[in-house]
Length: 321
Ligand SMILES: Nc1nc2c(ncn2[C@@H]2O[C@H](COP(=O)(O)OP(=O)(O)OP(=O)(O)O)[C@@H](O)[C@H]2O)c(=O)[nH]1
Ligand SMILES: [Mg+2]
Image (cartoon, rainbow, N blue to C red; front, side):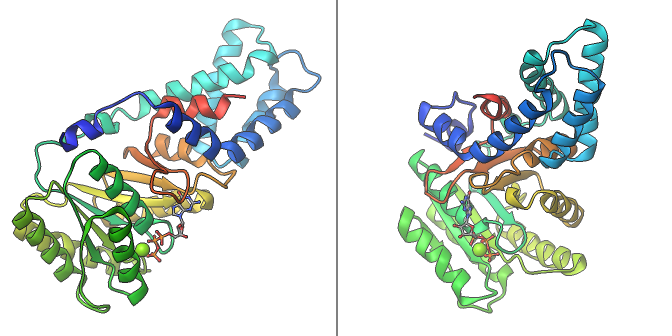
């Protein structure tokens, strides 16, 4: 079985659905309890309810522009149907959010080209502590389970612990890691990793990078250098530049997304730490605002806690009582 099969759209298994439901619990509780408060004692969706709904969405980290779109649609619906009862509000909201996400992001992970590249090269970027290395470990595990040969490149050479951490993940999920001592040139590690991937006939190479480049010019230069070096070994690499964002940072995640998309050609997003945060609404805002698909979501620290993002399942889970 190849990479293509792994990424082919599949129905969520009951276990995945459960992990999603559990992961989204805090976001959901926060969201639904605010909505029930807003409609308590009211029978129809009126302007007051809509005002409150707007505030709820904004404070749930959906973001202002996405919130305004959602409210606008519900207003239209209310104007058209004249009378919309408050008991229908959850369903209405769920449908409108699903429609919005479906329209706005035609470039979903389904439509990516996978199977044609070997090795398929993923470069993982993002600021300090968002969950890059953990996401790489989980992804390596899933790819391996699906029958792919995977190699990891420890190109975060900024500190010794970073190299050790990815080596540990390699052991844990039984995947090869190419590493050099701390302080080595990240581009050189990336180069070695791809050389090794080609020599070994690997299907996927995943490159970890440091998250500590605080200014955009440095970041851009560093990532460009790594990319250029990789292209000497595998033309067209990296096929995927995966930006990892920590969902629990809410609006900061949106800000980081802006910064990184300006610095490099990010073409996939991973949103981590959805478990344990009430800010999961940020996934809706990010899916709506950026033309880059959210591809993976992290719902825990375990090896199986990474899922392919399914917009419909996500929104359903958010509204499932
Ligand atoms: N609960 C939860 N924790 C996560 C998730 N993803 C990552 N983490 C935790 O977040 C912390 C940071 O993760 P790392 O993978 O080290 O983050 P990083 O981006 O590689 O960090 P640096 O290498 O320091 O830039 C770790 O304690 C992870 O276990 C997730 O989906 N859920
Ligand atoms: Mg790391």
